[in-house]
Amino acid sequence: MTQGADLGLTDVGDWDLGVDQSPRRARPGGALKSLRPTSRHLGAVPFFGYIAIFLLWPTIIVIVGAFQNDSGQLTLANVTTVLGGSTYLQAFWASIRLSAETALAGGVLGALLAWAVAEGDADGVFRRQVVAMSGVLAQFGGVMLAFAFLATFGYAGVVTLALQRVAGVDPLASGGWIYSFTGLAVVYTFFQIPLMVLIFLPAVDGLQVQWREASDNLGGGSWAYWRYVAGPILLPSFVGGLLLLFVSAFSAYATAAALISQGSPIVPLQIRTFLQSEVVLGRANVGKALALGMVVVVAVVMTLYAWLQRRGAKWRA
Amino acid sequence: MARLAKRTSGGSRRPRSRTLVRWIVLVGVGAYLLVPLLSMLDFSTRGAGSSRTLEAWKAIGSFPELLSAIAVSLELAVLTVVGMLCLLVPTMVWVHLRLPGVRRTMEFVCLLPLTIPAIVLVVGLSPVFAWLTYFFGDTPLVLAFVFVVLVLPYAYRSIDAGLRAVDIGTLSEAALGLGASWWGVLFRIVIPSIRGALLSAAVLSIALVMGEYTIASLLNYNTLQVVLYQVGLRNAAVSVAVSLAALMFGFVLLFVVSSAGSRRRRAAREESTLAPLEAGLQL
Image (cartoon, rainbow over all chains, first blue to last red; front, side, top):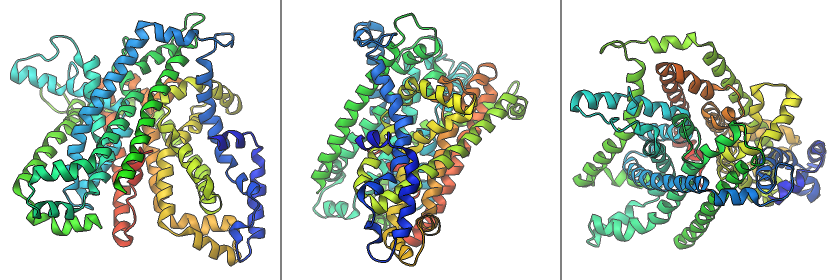
């Protein structure tokens, strides 16, 4: 972090100097250590400079802007508006609830699916199909997943029509649930499951078959194996997975934006309102305060995750 | 090794109840994942009454804005891959060989985009884009600058796995000792030995760029996903057809890469090429 910040200010043109020196000095014997430390560091300048411009600068604009008024003076007004406005707090609460619920549902189903996949051939076509499909659905879907669910549960959706025709019930009688909070939860769970498969599969692969055999030989049944052997081993990975799923749902925007065009029940959609519409004078930076709030929530969860990983690593060793 | 052991001693001795539970899980969770995808197929081929028609699929060609958006997204994918490779490969190799102390910092920085939501990034991006538009004119292709940042976590994991799998330290010492230049080492020694990792980094980047919506839509650039959404408001069947095609395109890309990886893995016991997908999220 500090690396990027102070190197980012250095002239990027110096990169060539650092590079050209290496082959000239690169003679047999300690060739890789011949450069002075500072000129060696110049090699990393373009990368950290790029990151400083396209990742750190925007982030700093958000953080600083959250504490500025329209004319750039320092103020706490934006933050107090967010903390004091029930609309914003409700949006945060809804976002957190949505993320937690779908992380739990998707986490449990995804972990089960990961186990079922890991039971099969490790190099098999089926496993590779599942991993490739999970990658697409979990990380690259966005708007397309919203269309998938409109085609399934929308007003002319396949399942909706089938229920009307076969069972005679109208699932949309009480309104278009797919366009509401419930709909969001169903779609989010849909991309949480494959995400959990990707996260949890390596952990399930780590279970040694000898452990199962040892448990069996000592007279333990399936219950004993999962309760006393596999369960405790997998628990840190499972909880870690849930935290990552929470972050993924909390950060998601595309699916919700495509599904919900009226109203803004969750924080990313609140931010959309600030970016798209003419904002009331003096409140232009409230959007930045909302964005800062998201960063804070994600940072708290990721700190928890890092702590859990450290504990897990210690426990395994 | 664990996988090997599992394969040899699992199989026949597995109790029947476990197989049953496995199938229940596969069918149950599989249905949740597959029904919406099959619904897309049904929805996009629905004709009058209960007939089937490919009209929606054929109509894709009659939406010029859709075709040009696909072109824009493909160009963005190419630019992003090129930018990502130019930025990441020399730096990672340099850090790997000469700045081992910077490695942790670099890993941390590369994984940062996972913890800064795109919706947050876009709030702070407008001054950056004001500059970009000033320098490059009003073209959606400037999005590639930010997309390079978005693909960093996946690309980093992928290339890092590749660099760990071969001993490039020894190889490059040997090459330098024989009089090769630094760029010679990079292009003739390192890049050929990690091309599998570079391929998977490229594919993951392409998939991500083709699916990106948040930043493009909020900065008002017409990429595939943005136009897909707009077309969907007028003609849902066409949008569903394009969505299904795009998802399948992503699936085939990832599957081909994983197949290539697994063939090589069987030969060299290398790590899976899709490992970055599995591990890309683990900070």
